Image 1 (tube, protein in one colour):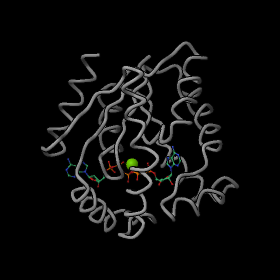
Image 2: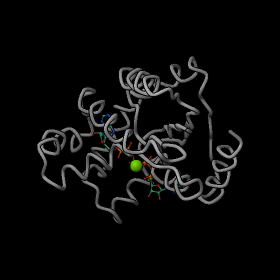
Image 3: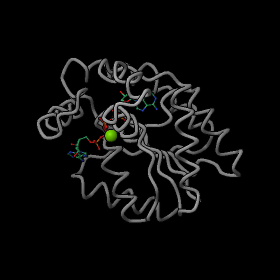
Length: 189
Ligand code: AP5
Ligand code: MG
């Protein structure tokens, strides 16, 4: 089974390219951000806990995320693979992911790191704000999300490198061109 991590800053295209891989290869997808937003919308206990963190652009504590992950993953074991969109985001989460996969005889197949400059990210997220109206898509919270990304998530690149699973992508073209490149990369695995 393929276990593909799509990694990058807010607005780098994790959701966009995950969806393309799902369509092309029939993978299942775990988007932790989508899972959390659904919990908030449904007004669950977890949703109430996480809302404040998301609205402030902060990460949800690792223990909540790790609990969610294994449950969702186990419902996807009969497919050709799983895309992780937005997880892991801390070293603790990365180690938990590695352990969880190992317990099931699996491992990370590849991590696709999306490199996009900060001014382009801001432009995209402000544009998306007008279309989707996500609570954390305003300039002030976006800046906090960038800070959290660089402080807590970016250091994971070294961890992925040490695991031998990192694939760096610096994309310049339009969305369709990038989708084509990522699909080629995954098809060659
Ligand atoms: P999450 O939902 O994961 O948000 P994020 O990381 O901030 O990323 P986004 O979803 O904003 O961007 P994306 O990379 O998916 O880009 P997209 O494809 O939409 O997390 C939200 C929050 O949940 C976190 O802040 C945290 O509080 C919490 N959380 C989630 N996971 C967690 C975890 N593991 N641990 C703890 N807390 C967690 O693209 C952006 C826009 O750009 C779109 O409009 C798209 O159409 C456009 N676009 C994409 N590619 C291109 C291109 N090439 N050219 C032009 N436009 C493009
Ligand atoms: Mg997303």
